[in-house]
Image 1 (cartoon, rainbow, N blue to C red):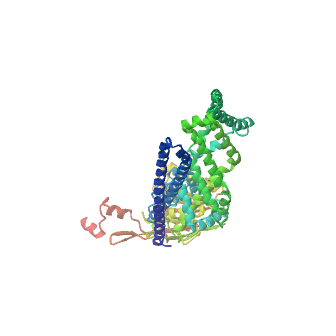
Image 2 (image 1 turned 60 degrees about the vertical axis):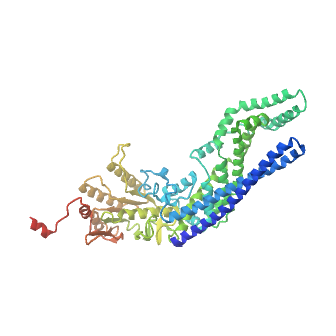
Image 3 (image 1 turned 180 degrees about the vertical axis):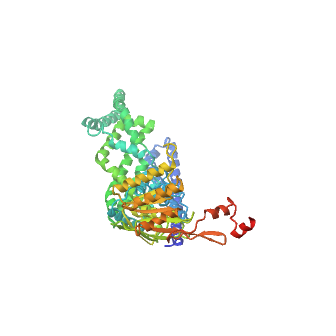
Length: 605
């Protein structure tokens, strides 16, 4: 589909969800009015029931009807919220098609100036690749996606399995958006997962002990019986108070441990319910790819178990109401009953809970890449090579608008492994390096790449493009760059295959020293297991092509100056650059005076 067709697709879906919202809003209004009428009827029956006792017999029926209406209203309202999120997803996708993806989470928490390549390639942060791809909503889902974009690549088989899953998900728009809508409803705070993990590792202090099992089964029925009988038999009030007091003594002896237990698990009901909804969608969908079938298998019965946990947590949270807490702990040993049931659930399911939640998070990340594939049907999935060969035809940067994107070809292998790229300022050298780096990162994560054809080895990416100084670490720009280059050489000497992207290396020294150091570095790289692209203004590096024929090749981006106008075609060409533009631009901007033609200069002299 073209961009126009995609926009129409999302606009039509938005219209469908808007119509659904209108229908469900009307239903909610009707239910609200009927619920209000039933509540008023209940009050009227109570009022007139004092003079006509027969009316009081209808109160349970009216109360039951009111409860049903409340539950129906809550169910419809939850469905309305879900549809609203689905509508907003269509709006966001239209904006993204127009290159506005600012509503997506930027992944700024993953930004690191010291990472081997993510800072240089704009993988995280505002306007980043992560922000463009990201459709995850949970902290765990974001971490999965970030890990795929920033960690060492997995094996070729795992990458191919992920590719098959992403291809399948690209065709499942309804499923992908249901997962995203559920994720948007999960109000998960940064510390929630940590507290949940602490609860899972917390040793049981009620469940599994015969004494507590007997007390919890026997004492509440006895207390309730005594309290009820005390209403009809004189002299038993003291026994009723004593029975309730015993429950409070038992509860009081455990209150610190109960409070600590509740701290870990409290206020997790909504979060767990939404995870259960995601697991439900994952479980009921049919899959063909191996990875998705595996995730679907892991989700079997998981939604029921997680929803059960959410119900238990909700019941435990009732203790936060002081009046309810006073009543139920006097009659039911409520706190200990809740702890017992939660510990019982944990005993049977704790080992699987983290895996269940990770299933939803991994699916979120896969759906993000599936949406990327759907929105870019012209992009291709990379071939994953067993040898050290990297090639691309008509490769561009995926974040550039399609109408403005200029594509280029590239080919590197173990024999022809180093490209020296020269060119004027703004001619496209850095963008070309980033285009290749970003597409390799996409390929190794299993996502489609911005090219007509792409082949990539399983290789680690290393870059040196934006090395920054650090006052905190008392480290100059130049020393930071040397440290980056040293770490690259250390990895190569250990035999680690690398794709190396370097932009104007050794900028922090004089031109003579810079050239000598750059030549020495390239000679070292020529003997190592790496594929290297070096963008530079130093035409002297181009002489290395003669020293290492076939190993090192020169390419360039040229500037065009015609009729006193500067232009670029951003096309990669064979050979060394012949035109530079710094002097021209400085004159054009009035920084330096215009250079007079030779004849005019002589006349002035």
